[in-house]
Length: 355
Image 1 (spheres, rainbow, N blue to C red):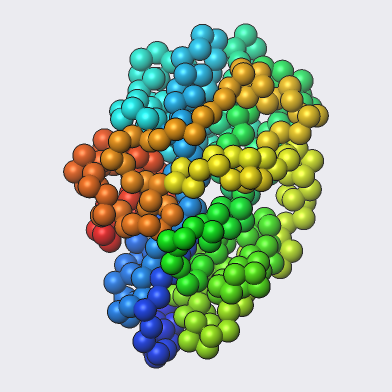
Image 2: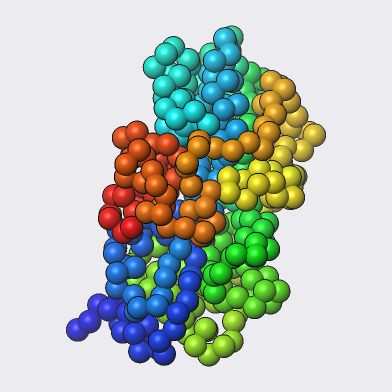
């Protein structure tokens, strides 16, 4: 008896041959696709591209430079998730991990609430959490600030580098050279904002959109639905991940985000400045806003010379098209964030040889 993955693969192969490019917009999808070897199983003509779905990857080099400068300030403890510690700024090799080795106070945390506890235990230090992520991690970051306020932890602040997916997808679609015919929408983000948040793709742009899960059979199911829509010429929104994603999403998480954040203009690697794509703190939480507390600012500057991470996450090229891939840039000595992150397209291609 064939497995569920084999069933969906046979259904895909039974569709009319077509030359199409599909884009996944989630770093977990990128890694799952590479790990399962899904690209090699698809019919000739069907190409999968990675989009701006890796939070660390879309953070511009200039923001990393500012983070490194902050980490060098006396009396400051910078806290972050693990991937951020190894991301270089505009100068290859310079990262939070390197600054920590040189004496800077940098701590890896698994939750922003852990950073609140570090601040509570170090009342004479200023503890800054780097709030990186999309709508998936935004509620947890907001909850940490609410916790700090409730407990009176005043030496804690967050640099919100949080971003939202819809404005980035719209920015991609406005690019003249963007040639993607369907989107595998991010299941994790959709658990928060709901499947309906992606309806604008078929209704405004005429592009098929399917919210998908992360197991190989779930990904193949979502890809089949995308390809079937293209074969029928009827773009629409479909939810192939109903066990985790509802139409409306998580209302409680949405209320927490609305209480703490407001949309703002933000910078993305590869896409530049996008209006309304970032989540900044509302005035009620200005005491916990690291940007205001430390007068931080980020200019739109280029990343390391020769690095094509910005092109990779915009679907302009594959990881192997970057001249540094696997040569100057490796997981052991990365130049760009796509080779660092556990959700990065270059890291996935390098590890699983899906170049």
